Each structure stands twice: as C-alpha cells, then as structure tokens.
Length: 78
Image (cartoon, rainbow, N blue to C red; front, side, top):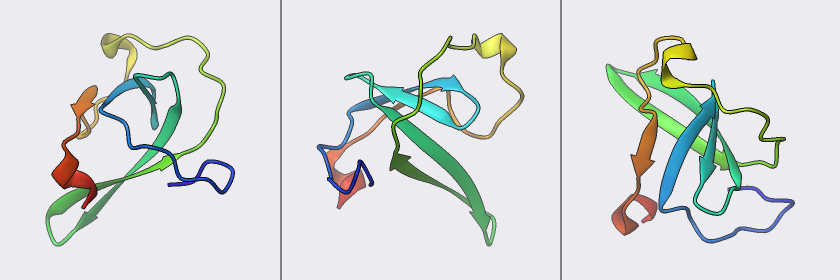
C-alpha cells in the first residue's frame, strides 16, 4: 500500500468508481491491476490519491473479470 509513504488501515469494502479505480468506505481511492498467472486471476491494489470525479454506473463499465464491489476479510491482509 502506498499513501504518500504512509501505510493506512486496510479498507473493509471497495466500490468501483471507474475502470481500475475503486473507492473505500472513507472515500479513499485505490488503483487495481488484474494479473493472470497460470490460469489464476490476482488483483493488486494500491492506495493512491486520485480525483474521484463522477462514478460510472455498472452498465457504463466495459466487461471485466473484477467485481464491482469487494468486501475484504482480515485474512486477506495476512
């Protein structure tokens, strides 16, 4: 995680705002990059401050293998 060099608390939920940009419950932004290795899809997230702008509706987003909303568990961060 990167936030000006300071690691913050992990988010509980992430909602898609636009392609590759998610927003958490505190309106902090996260960039998400999908990678596929040996048939397994992985998503790498990084806390980066970007202007929120207008959120896109799911129908406005291109097809993606990533979900529109994630709820993360504590085990995910271990």
